Length: 204
Image (cartoon, rainbow, N blue to C red; front, side):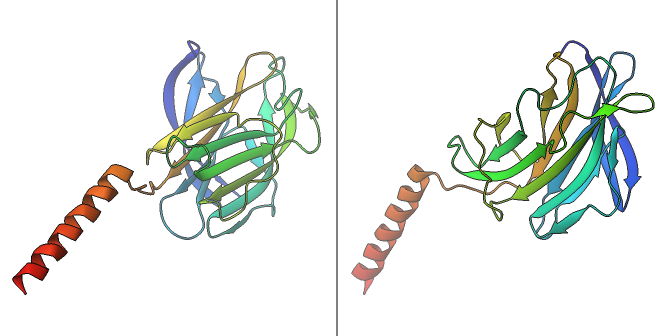
């Protein structure tokens, strides 16, 4: 983490994805590639990608609470690969401390393996899937989520590291907060309601 020096905002347009991407820069100004989805309203989520992510033309799909696309991740030579030795990578937001109440998830798979040499860096094919409010059931995942956070309504980040210890991709989610009733407050409201009914009955 000490190598991360400042936050940047990167604007990029890729095959119809017009986005504003909060990104992180390493020392020397090299930007960590970043993928994110904002889901603050009903309907399809708003995606973004930063520099270092080449979205495959025609691959983007979306519907209410869901989006997916294919892309190539650029990794500096010598900084390893994603999902080694096993994957995929999964970022989960929950609606509270109970991990079973999943609000949003963002998954990055590497179905074509570890990639190969590109013109100036290593290129690895990735498939990205986002779902909100469990509209799409969580797929079978034999590993624990890479990151699991309680949603807070702001941008939340999961940094993905290669086998060399380099941070090579950031996943970001901004989700609306679903209010989960507190059991104590629910009982209090119920008690107040019963008292009110009792008082109303006496007046009659």
